Image (cartoon, rainbow, N blue to C red; front, side):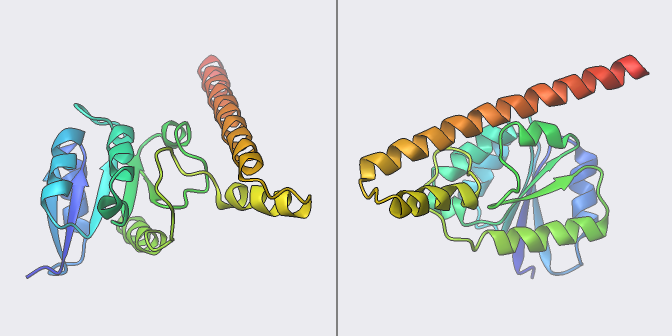
Length: 192
């Protein structure tokens, strides 16, 4: 009997079959979902060891599934691999480096798949507080308390204000990245 259940949520049958075939035989039971809603329901019903989540899905997007996972502490502990053929769509929503999940670009080979699974398992062990928004880098999370303490500021209201500014700035950075990606895409189209 397989010791690990892997939930593969992808609207492409080829990807789901590819993951199943690339895993070492006998160690894994693969459960498949063809859309985000089906996948989310399965992860709540089954005791899964790993979630492989496509970012672009019908019925409930990978981003929406991720947000729902973040609201439930028991689901947040499950190692997560987010898959996409277009990394820029993922980086529009998440700050790199991806701290709490692993990213796997499509297409992928067996070595990349196994590496992503191992990395996701390590990242899932990183302690974190309840997240209602995408994670920001740990450097930003640690910067505010250290800076505030160094400047003699110990008020939690001041720290919250500074954290809010960081979140706002991160949003602006994400928007600039998105605009840059759009410019690069436009230039590439014009060159062709």
